[in-house]
Image (cartoon, rainbow, N blue to C red):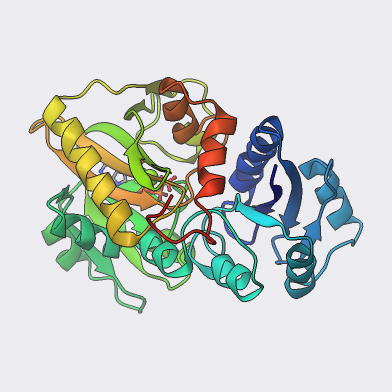
Length: 343
Ligand SMILES: Nc1ncnc2c1ncn2[C@@H]1O[C@H](COP(=O)(O)OP(=O)(O)OP(=O)(O)O)[C@@H](O)[C@H]1O
Ligand SMILES: [Mg+2]
């Protein structure tokens, strides 16, 4: 039995998704026999430390009643109780290394990747460069830096139309637009810019094909690929926020039906990125298998994949015969107090 605090909510635009993830983490950790409590981080970064048998809703009610603490006091309390932080956050602050840095400074062991690996994993441009170096195919792309000019001609000369516009550091498809008309590009860039902490925007060629994701879980020191999941966002142009979390029509096929060559290349790239970045716990790598060529095109890495009802890693683990408490135990054991790569 481990004393665990599930960090939930946070200041990012994925606050709601994090609440859904964290509710499932509490259920899974308690089913695994752990003493798990919620720690709600409000949108304005105040911390509300719940009691051992509290649900997230209790922590939300306490936060609404003004029972919250500055981060430093909440962290001191968790450190005194010898608690391991299970990070259920997504997006900026939770997934980009900031909270990991705070936890390290407070001497609290936490699940998932370290501050540097998290920051790198969150940067979609950097990860495309890394994946290319590892031999993966990637969509052609251009980055639009902050500034008054949006270089429409330069971007479209590289990506063509249709293209995808997204924040360089983002998640849950927030701020992502599929652009089919030249006239819509500038508006899409402005929308994506608002969702990126540094105002940087990635524009990439749209790949026509099947979306496939590969979970990687470190089991007793060794990164292990979970079964591939294919996603069909039926009725949606792409796997947008509503297709991810609201739609009951989105179809998930696990194991994905793809050629052995494409499957092996996705597993190889995913495992190699996990090792190269020194990731911990569980991560998820997204691809599109191109319809015309059959090649797997790398999209991005998620160092804190979701655990909502609709999420892909718990589904892949289940398909592998691994129940949620067992999956969470592997992540819990691969915490920041354990040297990378060691059981
Ligand atoms: N180049 C592309 N070609 C085709 N579809 C794309 C492309 N880029 C993104 N998409 C679509 O947009 C979705 C979101 O893109 P991406 O995974 O890069 O962003 P995200 O917001 O980080 O998502 P996540 O929830 O996985 O963190 C993809 O799942 C896919 O449906
Ligand atoms: Mg994705």
